Image 1 (cartoon, rainbow, N blue to C red):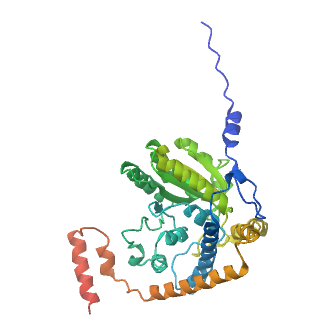
Image 2 (tube, one colour):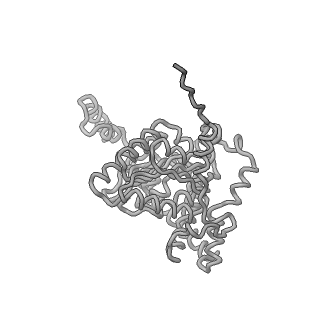
Length: 370
């Protein structure tokens, strides 16, 4: 019997077919000009101004938080400048009924979702009160473990679906986070159960100091959605209108029962990974900085709104000053928070403290009362 000839597999063609389906979506270019009117979101003038106001607020918050950290008045801080469109425009498509599961760089979205700024500052300091969220705040504290929020979001999303909620779980990670095992487990679980979720990969180019092209051989990170059988979209993360439009479509798709969506936002962080010792000048050149600064999300949106007669330098200055006052008041409130005690830490370790921990709590309470 003649042997059956095995057909050769054209792996190169397969790769080309996968990669060409993930083009970058954009509405506004770096000069504030509309490049794709078909994707233009249906936002009113007031909504456009509100989105820009939130982005300006976030830039000021980043500047002041950096200064407060260097003064020793904040603890852990991960800079956000450059990612305003990726963060605030995506959050702008959320409702208060949606659940937010942020990473440690996603404090701006959390505050806009309803967390008092004072509590965000306390979270940065590691204070217990920084994670005591109000009952009506549909969010979890920022996740420090890389990628762990993806698995949590999958669970929350399935819960929303089973309860018939008109709500979606939103979660964010970075390009490095998309290489974690939790990332794949989370999107796979959500995809298998068609859970109500929108997953964001904020591709800011570096996993701490590791360049994106070194930590993954994938042509795009959006195409990682293929492995979970869910839609994947790559969007210009410096373009607030494109980010909003894609997020709004993804939310509508997911809440309708179609399952999760993965969105990769191509963005950039101007500062270091965190203010805990990272020096970006050791792995990023000035040419890279110049390239991304020309694509600044505030600048392109500012040009667009100004040409529509919706924005002015005076209005922006007003928001800047108001934000500074808000931050000053919040840090003052945070400074007035009660000092933490060892007994408090122990009390929060377990819902029902085992005997040995309960004994330690009583010992420390006695010491602290003296």
